[in-house]
Length: 76
Image 1: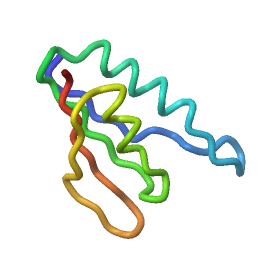
Image 2: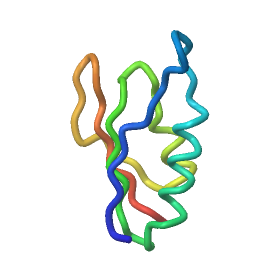
Image 3: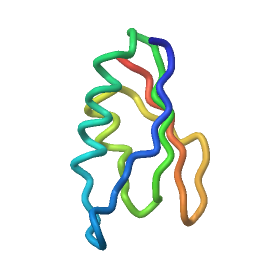
């Protein structure tokens, strides 16, 4: 697959939980071909970029404001 787009959930009730996002990032890394991209939009406070770098590959910020961040991760 060349492209996956993701807006991971981060709430379970009122609690902030990121385990679902980690599983989605892992699944995306599994289905992307080398060089394929994962575009992710998430709440800026969550700081997913280091996790995306580790799980998927090099990650850059494509856009950001105080509330939301959009990143592009390229599969190794």
